[in-house]
Length: 134
Image 1 (tube, helix red, strand yellow):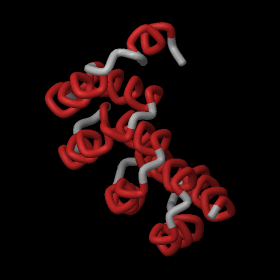
Image 2: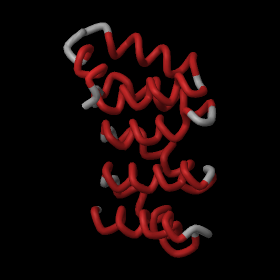
Image 3: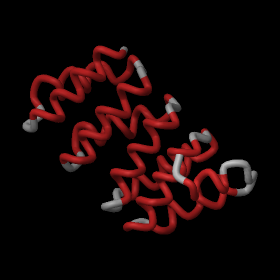
Image 4: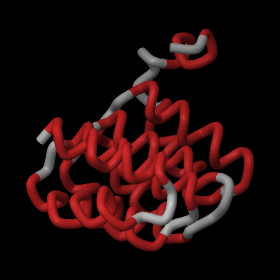
């Protein structure tokens, strides 16, 4: 955990404020806020992270997907599956890793397809590794 996140991890208002910020900010700020939410691991952030993911803002999206995987809430599986199938290469990679952390059976078909047919070898490898975790 980064020193900055360690400073706020016991503040009850931190997660709601960061969750609002990740939706509103986007860009680099959204990326850093998403990473902080992932480090905090608080499930209260999941709805805001999903909403931010639906906005599709780069570069925040990669951090949002990573945060959803770190938090590990199964309600994120549908958005992660969609991003595994349609996202940019770095987002597809993070989505495969996140789905592996979730271990949600609903992701099996998408991970299998990605492990066999994604155009990038490292995404195929991440999807295959995620399948082995299920």
